[in-house]
Image (cartoon, rainbow, N blue to C red):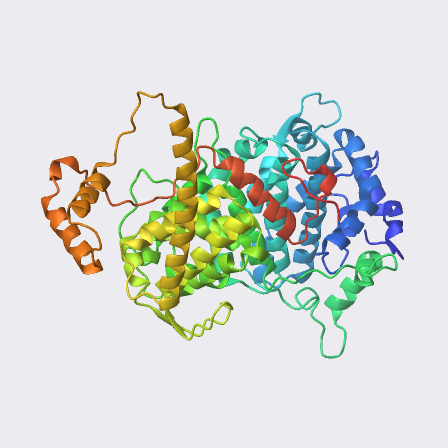
Length: 608
């Protein structure tokens, strides 16, 4: 890719790309690879830039798909990358910028090609392209190895073992993105994949021992929210005299192939996309969610979900049971802080739900925190702005509240936390209110919004379940919260009475002349005592008669009304909901990745 290209349309004619995709085999020891990998450009991040790249190189990719089974050039490129990664850690320690730069470029090309291959062919065909066969003259036997599995293990090693420095930031992001691309075969199937190439490689074999280390690294990437280094400075640091050997060599070898992106491409302005403060944290979280929601293999559970379910606090010194695989420890305080700060995104809310629902250690820790308002307030704000959020985000926020309200300690403590000046609550000025009262107000507002707009039965049921869970612990409610409870009760009572009246009329219509409806014994008992007392009774006299009747009421005719506690229960096949949801987040949120909407099968997407 080192030759000059004045515009993006020249890419298909690039001599290095043509040689890579052509009919001639290139040995992994050929100097060609150093020339191919010596390009420099600000990595494309917007879908516009990536779409331009894909459209410009489609002919090159098609040629490679056609010729690679005979040339093995893709395998040679992967071999070059694999050999370089063996020295990557040492190169980072020695600040070998050029070596890391070329290794990153190799991985970038592999990621782009892998995405095209996965989109255009079956998994069986994909494996054939990644099967490297080395034959020598006169030798008819072949030494075949699975380069795809080797590549995947190498990526896991790179993510977990290479220190995060300015010069390694981009290659770390690229390694995570390549793993997401490897798992993206799910995007091109309407049904949830239960037996796929990802199960074969990720849930057994040489990749399996990296499970806990990978999950831990991805979580810490999310926690730390490391920002990317300034563009260019981490690859080619200029000397004070404006040059230097490294910068001169790089700028001489890496000619202007990719400057078209810097200049806006073919004369048109690229669409501005919102910048992420930490692409590494974003990609890490997306990969973590994809791994956690892989379906179990036929003969083994998902090890990444097992790791998420079982990790403990670094302050917990108790030993892990031998029956728990892939266990590790992480700083719960840092994780809690990051979760509180990042709840504006769907993926962070989904991570919070996943941890609360599946990891009892995390759930116990969070419920014991004395600053739960830091977590609850962002969740309430999601529900409050229900009109601006997608339904999945609202569901996750609501289920999180339902899980929290299953705990009586939480239901008591939220009424002891006093908040001041909740600026995002606009219906009424709340200068001082308890967290519990605010929670009630937001949930009731969500119920009323749902009753008048979306009419979603699932949302309605879970809102009411959360209120029912809290009701036994209502204390010192704000007057506005109490008013809203009464208004809600009045509204629901009217709807209930209407339904009851319709049911009664239907029942009466089906009764024969000899059928007599059974009376409600409690109602009948008190009505008869009030009738015996005469007419024109005062309120005080009615209350006195009822109190006396309660004492005289035969207890054997009554049933004890149990205290209800509604618990969140996941559906029988949660993957049918969560896997499309996770991949929709990847589609919309991944940095440096673009898929043609017309190719997507898992969910419906409108074209840009």
